[in-house]
Amino acid sequence: AEELGKDKEVVLAAVQQNGYALRDADDELRRDKEVVLAAIYQDPGALQYAAAELKRDKDVVLVAVRISGFAFDYAADELKRDREFVLAAVREEGWSLLYAADELKRDKEVVLA
Image (cartoon, rainbow, N blue to C red):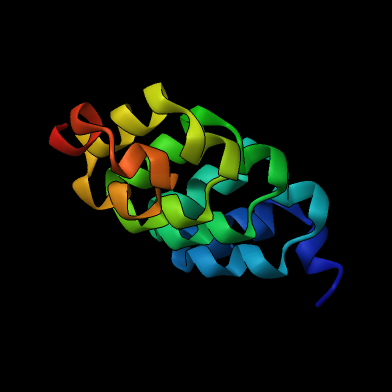
């Protein structure tokens, strides 16, 4: 089973059926944007199993947030403090505000986005 977690085609097929299969993928594939996005499209909560650099990737996180604002919980803290990014996330999905940095939760423009 460990070998299967290193095979990109196998992992891609698995995450397209169940995004959480990303959890069992090899670290290298958890850094692969194509694999991670496929997992997120199936279940945005799969973002939690992505490599740290993809949790900082604005494009990847925004895809997850568009599907479910709750996925913002798994984004890198630096994105949760990035005012422009939080504005974009909240505009896409209001629930994102739950996971923004506290100072942004008090920002009127962000809250009203």
